Image (cartoon, rainbow, N blue to C red):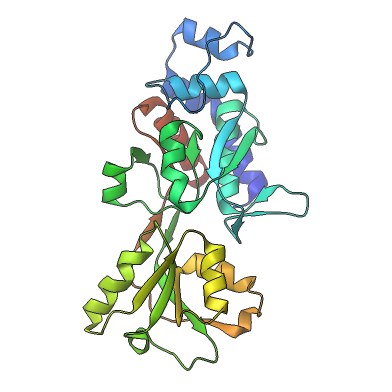
Length: 281
């Protein structure tokens, strides 16, 4: 995404997005233009999203979009030297803010752990989740989340040490593979080895990517599995140098990465979805 042109296009489409999703109700329009005051009705974080129309009302009152993301994945969301979030996902957070508030910088970036991302969405801690999250049927039905237009089509891969001599998945049969827990990665590893007719490796899962990397560096795992885009980003910043790692050719899953919002507010879902679509179409 070219940040300037993409976000400018979204900002230009903001009026259309909001008018299409909120209708022409004069009272609603008046409310949308009212600045936050002590007398305004507040939708507090930690009390859920509050039903139809509640998220937009909260966002307009607060003057910011709380975007759940991360700060440790090169290419998607990291911190620049000034401490600002940059990357593919970070720019989509800004695009949503531009569409809703007319200001691409009206974003409160909330870094959420992998295991906590859906809880943060359900509780109302964040307004939207843009954190390289795979859209699956199970998550769509069980996590209290509504997934929107896919922003990045990924697939799972496997990374190994360059000096390991491992060149195929089959060579990892019966060995140890490390993954981030609470992701689709865990089950996909076993499923793929069963499909190959090979003994599934032992899968060690960790709460965060930093812990996976530490285990790999300590020699506790023979392979490191995640989405290929994530492996590529992590490899580029690996302490031992990118050349010390190799990503195998095999891609063994389909991982459509998409933003998500909390169930129960179709108005907000449409607004965010069209903000994303404005960057694509």
